[in-house]
Structure formats: C-alpha cells, structure tokens
Length: 350
Image (cartoon, rainbow, N blue to C red; front, side):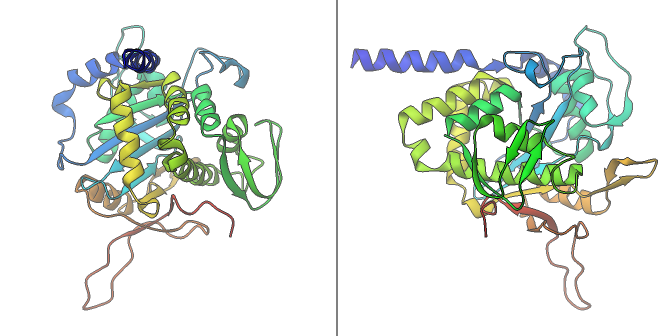
C-alpha cells in the first residue's frame, strides 16, 4: 500500500510539474473584471483553446525560424452545456478582423486598442489579450483557456497511438512535410500536425478548408481519447495525460491533473453525436477579400444561443451553403438556427 501510494504521488507530481499555470493572464483578466461579460448560465463552461505557432520551446524550432513573434494558429471556443449532454466547438478564423483592446505586453508596456486580425491578439498580449478579444467579439464569458504548441499536439496524438482519418484524395505537401495516400489512414503526431496545418496543396487551398480539416481531425481525436482503451487503461491514460500536460499552459483553474482529468471525463460522458464542430459565420472583409468579418445576423444568433446555453444544430459542411438561420414559413415559428459544421462522429470513410 505504501509503495502504491508513493508511486501514485510520483505520477501526480510529474503531471503537476508538467502544467504551466498562466498566472500572468489570470492577473490581467482580474484587472479587467469589470468589463468582462456576465456568466449567464453558471453551470455551463466555455473554454478557449489556443494553438500557438511559436517556434520557441523544445521541438518547435524545426517548423521555422522564431522571428520573435507568436500568433494563435488556431482558436476554438468550446462550449460545454450545463447538463453536460452536448458540446459545441466554434472555430474562429485567424484572419477574422476584430477589435483588440489595449493589452499588456510582455515587456510591461500597454498597447493601444487596434482593429486587426484575431491571431495578432496573441502576439500583442498573449492569452489574456486573446481571451479579452474573444469575449468582446462574442459577449461570451470565457471560464478557462488552454494554450498548446506544436510539440504538445504531436505528443498527444502519439500517446493515443495515432488518429484515423479518411482522405478523399492523396496529399503531397512539401511545406507541411506530408505525403499520404487516399482512403483511411492513421496519422501519427508528425503527420497529424502537417495535416491540420497544410493549406495551399490540400482541397481548395482556402483557410475555410483548413478549418474544416481541423474540425474533422479534432472530432476523430475526441473519439479516440473517449475510447475505453484509453480511459480505462492506466498506462495509456498516463501517457495521454503526460503528453497533454507537457506542452500545455492553462488558467490556474485547470492547472492540475485532477482538473484536467475531470474535463476529460466530461467529454467522455457526452455522446459523440452531440459533440459539434462549426466555424463562426463569416464573410470576406469589405476592405480586403483575403480577410474575414463576421456575417451578421447569423454570427450574433450563434453567440446568443451559446450565451443562453441553448442547443446549436449543425448541418453538413461539405458544400459551402449559406451560413446562419433557416427561415420559417408563414404562420409557423422559425425553427432553431442551423449552422454549417459537423459532429465528432462524422470523420470516417463512407
């Protein structure tokens, strides 16, 4: 019993040491507590997932030179319903034009508010700046945030022994160091990173296609992590938690193995078909077609439903249909808005 307790404590200490608590961001958010959105549904949880493209840190330099800047390569707002029976992950395009507030820089100075691309918020003021920007954009209170880098993403995929995906056509992308056949393939960590980052040589080369690919992959990863061969296998579970924590920076509320395990358990209890992925309704920015802006009123309808913890319906994102709500017929109430996206169950080969 003593030996088992000692081993358990050693594992817990190792995982705890892996996690970096984002205390600076917590302090900055506390300074601006008065301007943050209210928590309308206390039982629901909104978690901001930030994929950093920094080349600093162990294993990241191979993906390019570190020019002294870092931006959020991927930004996803994950909404967990108060009844824990559904989850909605909303991708926010990195080129979305937004109002970034005056943020505290790493050198201690404070920048002026600026209208720019979303991914620059992370460069200007780190995770706290990104959280404040997303809250101002959506009106949704962010309860927790996580930042993961390239190396951490790879290690997590390898810890679950790869993630199966279905490719409609082969991929040969030299920039992403990725060459894959068509059909069902299981991606290891290095391949998975190239798959979610590739752009020009895959599909139509758009950022829209890249975000859809990220959503499909995350759906497959969620399914893989939820499997009993991971959660009920102590050795596999330890490998997953070790990989997940090694390159993870979170707010203090999630900066412990217990908190992260509870989050994983919540995701495990949600039926796969109730884990939905979609991209925020957006359209080309009026002053630059290479940038995005929110498509209204569809975007606000989505944010309003998430704020109120109301169900969000998604439809197949295969074609590029119109975004937003469906119109009702005369004499009948309009049905719930339907947004283009997919569920975690929709990632296999037909």
